[in-house]
Length: 282
Ligand SMILES: Cc1cc2nc3c(=O)[nH]c(=O)nc-3n(C[C@H](O)[C@H](O)[C@H](O)COP(=O)(O)OP(=O)(O)OC[C@H]3O[C@@H](n4cnc5c(N)ncnc54)[C@H](O)[C@@H]3O)c2cc1C
Image (tube, rainbow, N blue to C red; front, side, top):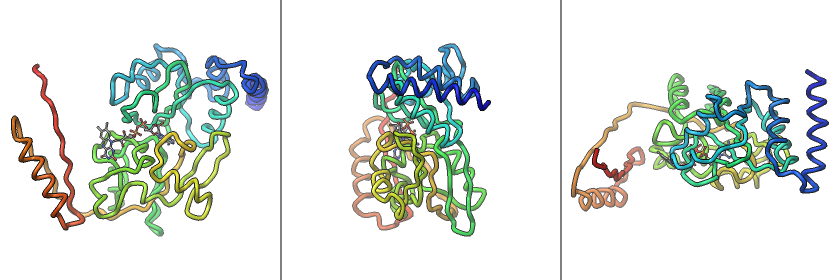
């Protein structure tokens, strides 16, 4: 194992030199080195590999399925992410970071002919009852996190639809709990971050506070890869919720009702989410 890693390091160093000289932009060098280091259980290079198919086709905006990564890598910890970023940098390859793939924009979490870093193997989570802090890795959906923390009678501030991913919090994050507790990123207490140069650092109000500030709403894919979130959890009580559905030409009344809620609601525990859906002819 050691000799494999030494060989990979040597390959990486030679790629680094070529990359620095601008001679390598082909993602195949990065994909080869990543496969050698991480092993086939954490890499998918074939477009026929079921994991590749799943990673490529699980975007909420299905238009993004058209982008074909050269390979998909599945890090399991910050050290893997560090190696991946160093390898990508050395090869000059394009890349993208993907959590749950709900960002609708081209090339935000999708990549054509580059390395796709799929975070869905990083699903560790824990709860510390002495501090009431919750810690989770970036690969879970909000629904998974809510179910997990529910067993402790707690929750975290996150997305309003269960299959949205943790990238939401890096962009701020509006939650049903936001009127009471603020945005998802307001709950951040400490983040483990892998910087573009591969360094693994902590960002908090006392360590790297500028980085911490930027990560609280500055958007995903901006300053590095967040590999662990430690956030303030919140108590969960009885929830009263439901859907009101209106059809056809009620949009004026719905708009007015939503406006009135925003203007006059004084209950910080109350929230509303308005949706317009167009039903196409079947
Ligand atoms: C159906 C639906 C419901 C939504 N509901 C809400 C809502 O209730 N509240 C709200 O505020 N927003 C909501 N959104 C918007 C949502 O917050 C954004 O689309 C968000 O980018 C999705 O995060 P993701 O992890 O699912 O997506 P991804 O596309 O995987 O990631 C989003 C961005 O963050 C980057 N990123 C992800 N993880 C990391 C990481 N660990 N480190 C560094 N960069 C990372 C990615 O590269 C990408 O640029 C919703 C979107 C959809 C499609």
